[in-house]
Length: 278
Image (cartoon, rainbow, N blue to C red; front, side, top):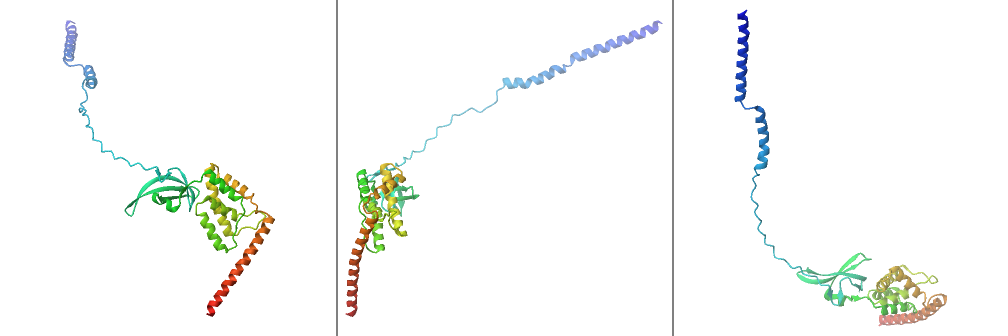
């Protein structure tokens, strides 16, 4: 019996001794948990305490600004005409000066008026030195417009000559830029409902003259072209040469002038015959 009791006691003692060794070994080795926490905390500490290495900011040297090139200001007025002003160009009618610019053409610098014709959708460049030669002028004053309207009420003066010659005269008046001369063309070519219809060429000239006249009147009176045309037609209706009586007078005048023309033609034929005989 005593021998059996001593054996367990020895086992207990050995177990205690092993436990003590394990405890001592554990005490000697560092704990894994603190090591993990140290490792986790290290980056945070580095992020907080260690600043990121950056290059020192060097102030940029001021760059010298290039020399300013002074832009040449375009003129706004020449020979009494200024930009944004409406003018009359004889060959095209009423236009507006958009600008006065310089261009070099064939090595020569020219100063030009840039004129826009809105209705014709056209832009024209006219040398400022040539405005007098081309007949460009300012808009007519109200007094001259009134005179042109009074002209429309006058008696039509139709020459009994060949239509080709009359057509040339009408075209010359239309392109003259003279508002009164244009009004005369409108008056002479106008046909009322009681009068014979115009031929195609007569109608073309009449509409060209009416367009030139109405455009200028509209700009001067600050009205629309439609209103200007109505005013022109109302003045034409007051002309004394409208109706059957006027037609009779025109026919009488035409016969007289035709007879005179026939006489001239006969004289001319006689002369030609005499020349051939000689």
